[in-house]
Length: 76
Image 1 (tube, rainbow, N blue to C red):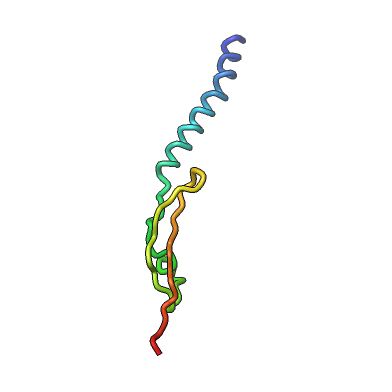
Image 2: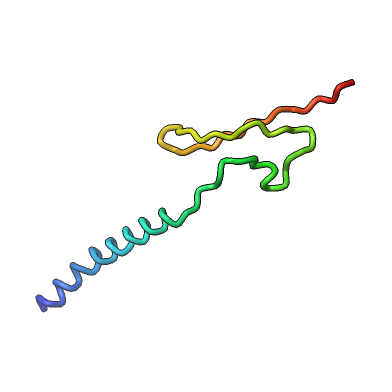
């Protein structure tokens, strides 16, 4: 009976350890999107917008990608 109690106590610990390792591995596998023209990448960019730049920043420990655009004007 003591052997089965020891095994039952170890099962939750082993499960949590495996879950923790799986979370670490999945965090490494997640690909970070490149800093580029996001609208063009998703075919949502109107012809009157011009991509200027993209920069990576940090906001409250969260990585942020910020893309800047400007409106193209025609010379009249």
